[in-house]
Every structure is written in structure tokens, then in C-alpha cells.
Image (cartoon, rainbow, N blue to C red; front, side):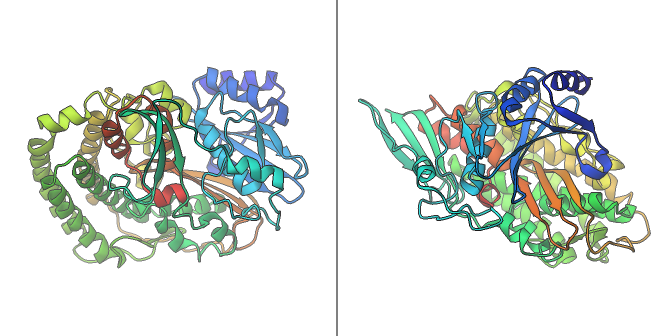
Length: 521
């Protein structure tokens, strides 16, 4: 297998590596390397076809620890590689030359923790603003030194003869949120893209440090408000893994049903708004009509239509109410009929095909280097799905059939999401017939997790959601870091969009299905 081969290469590079229990930690290999060796480590992973999942930082006061997560599509055994540096000398080689997607995580770490990444082409502010006085995620008040502030302020965009800069956003109809893109144009063609994020940044990860685990439940739904249950599942799943809590089978099946309903609702919202971006109004009303039917079902169970707070450590807040399973069955029949309408209205529509086929081609190799996941990756011919590679909830009992297309373009990203709605309906049909009797929540739940760290991943409608929690044994996280699929998917656009017509950029950006609060956190 691939993991065994890369283990040998890492050991040859001097990485102190050990195998750890995935069931309790969420990763299979834990390694430590001196900072000078991290670039060679990244090159070793790259040679074996690994993608970069996340790069994060933990402030242990006396030391700053950088954690790099690498994973593989065909051999999904996660590696956690750690580099420790002194706060007085926080410089580490950048791996952006190997994994461009990691470069964006490095920018985030630089502005929140003050770690400098040697060789990075641009460590300017990504989420924060120039008036910030200290590094926000450090444990104490650490002012930003003047020399670092100059780096954070970045370079001013310079035009050349026959080129100019324009703003797309922050409130542009096709960005679906306050997302700003600074575009360097030559005529109608894009030469360079500089994202400016953070307009909706709420310090979600800092909030986790000052709230108990129970108090943080509602926050998980405020990240991806379109598909919040995947984030909620990720949070409770990490704590269940850390505490060794066994979830009753009934609760697992309830989670699966609600997750798949939420997935369909998210895809429907994307479908309606994406087509509206491209000038088609009628399917928008069809999609929102179908989505309302799902929201009615979930509201009857959870009491909420959007930001659900339904999952709990060990199960769910309340058991199924009368008529829930029957309503789900009725929706399955309704949605299968409606899919024929979408095919007639959209799939064969000549204008839609002209705007999307062959546009925004995302090659498999580019997706790997940026850490793209979810339907965007599966439309590029890669059948990677966390529900299969790391099953959780009811997916341990039976998982979905993965929808894969190979065209790599906007049109195939549309087809994959439509296919996923069909697969989710099949999964729901199996699940509602498999819900067993029994408790909907574990009886004994620890009040505090033990000391240590844990990683957990789920498959949201946009791709892999990841959460990394460092516990010091108290009732609140020492450090909590979210892996946002929208962020990793979005940064690929900085390379994908070069040379593109601005009209095609609108089609491509919409096809990625971005949720801005999830990116900003």
C-alpha cells in the first residue's frame, strides 16, 4: 500500500514517526520533524500522490506547533506531521511551492499566529484588516511587530500597459455573500486573482476556547448554514472518538437520514441560485419549492429550519416524532418525479450547456495540489468520499454509491450534484426501512474529554469537513481548528481562473458551490 512506501521515505528523511490508533485519534501516523525538513517531507508526500488536507497551528505558549495533515485518495490513512518552533523565532519553510493550497493555510497561520513561512510569495492579510494590533489566536497578547506588519500589508496591485485591476465584490450577485476578488484584467481576460476574505469572520475558533463543549453546540450550525448538520456531526463525532462513546444504532440511522436530507436541500439551493447566476429563473422556483419540503420535515424534528442544533454527544437531542419516516418516504417519491423536470429544463438546455461545458476545467492534478474535495473533486474523475473512506454515523451500516464524472468542467459538476441527489434518495429509502428500536442516545456520557488531540472528518455537501481538537482535560477546548471544504475548493480558483473570460469566471465560481461564512469562520 501507498502508506507503507511513504513511511520508509519519511524515516529516511529523519522523521520521528509512529503508528497511532485511528479509532481514538482520527489519524493513523503521527510524525515529528525539524523545521528545516518540512519541505522535503512535503515533496515525499507529493511524489506518492498525497493531497494536503490542512495546515494548522497550536500555541503551547512556550512553543508553537504546526500540524500538517496529508491524506491519499486510494489509501486514506491520514498522516499528522508536526513541526515545533520557538515563539521568539517562528520561521518555517513554506511548502507552497509543492502544494499551492497549503500556501493559503500558511497565510492564515501567519496573520493569526505570527509564524513566518520562508519562501512564501505573499504573506499579506487574507482574513484580517490592517488595523489589527495583535495576533488573535495566540494565548497571550502578542503585538504584531512593525516589520511583520509591512509583510501583512502586502504589495499594492500594479497595472501594466494594457492591463487593469477591477473588483468583483464584495457584494456581487454571483458571489452569494461578501466575497471580494481583485482581478487583474487584460481586456475581458483574467490574468491574476487576489482574494480578499474575512468580511464575515467571527473568530469561531477563538469562541471555542472560551466556551464549554456543550455551549459550542450552536456554533457548529453557524459555519455552513446551508449544510450545517455535517459540521454538527463532525464536532460531536470528534468528541465521541476522543471519549470512546458508543452511539446506539437507532441514533446512527437518524443521523444518516437527517444528514442526507440536509445534503439534498443544500444541492437544491445551489442548483437554483447557480442557474439564476446564468440567467435561468424558472428552475430557481422549482428548486426552492423542493427545498421547502425538506425544511418542513427537518423543522418538525429539530424545531429549526436552518441552523440546527440537534446532534448531541452519544446520539441526538430527541427521538423521531410521529409521522417523520412517512414524510421522508413521501418526499422521496416527490423528488424522484421532480428530477425528471430538472433534466428537461436544464440538463439538455443548449444555453446552459454552452455556458458550462468545457468551462472551468479542473484537472485531477490541480485538485490534488489544492486539496479540493467533494462534488468538485468527483466531477474531476476521483471517487473520494469521506462517507466511504472513513464511515461515520449510519454509513458504517451501508454507504452511498459514489457519483463520479470525468469531464472536470462546470457541466459535470452540475451532473455530479444531480447524481448525488439520486444517490441520497436511494440511501434514504434504505435507511427509513432500517431504523431499529432502542435508545436514541447513549446513557453514560463523560463530562470532559481526556487530554490529547483528535481529528474527525465528515462529508458535507461541499466536501470534506475536518475538525482538530486539542484537549487539556478541561470542559472546553484548548484549541479547535475547522477544515473548511469551501476554503480549499475556493483557493483552486486562483489558478483555475487565469486566462478565463470574466463571464466564464462567474460560471466557474458558481459551480464550486461556496459558502462564505464557512470559509471565513
